[in-house]
Length: 184
Image (cartoon, rainbow, N blue to C red; front, side, top):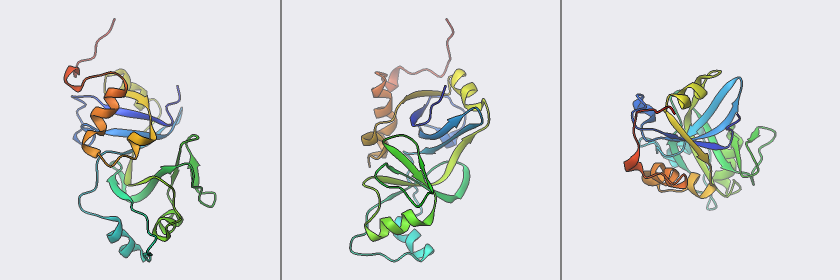
């Protein structure tokens, strides 16, 4: 099972408050583990303008807007840009699939500031990571649901509704969810 390019939707009762009502885009998933970015938790204490100042990136009148998110609890001082596949940065872009790419180098932030970045993007500080078999175990223990990742959902600026919108793609009403796993 390869879930790269899919969304993880946190189930009620997950037990980890950092992931409560989270929607995670999986950038990579293999037998070696998984890496993803939370796409619905905006950073309340940092804007892209402030980040540009900290990194010494000059703004232009063509600067694109990018939202800064809490990407996960691992390496929260490191930035990852999840973006549409129309951007490829100097060999440093992970092509997740034909719709999404992920770049973690300064060149993409410079391109966004210059107005030459991808059409759609989210900047995530930190990431969510799982060791071999860990994510699969969490899914089996009813920690996550999975669904296809639609760019309009992933890049939406409506962070408050991404969790319920992701559930709706599966035909699930959030009110009907239970934190108890069942077995047939």
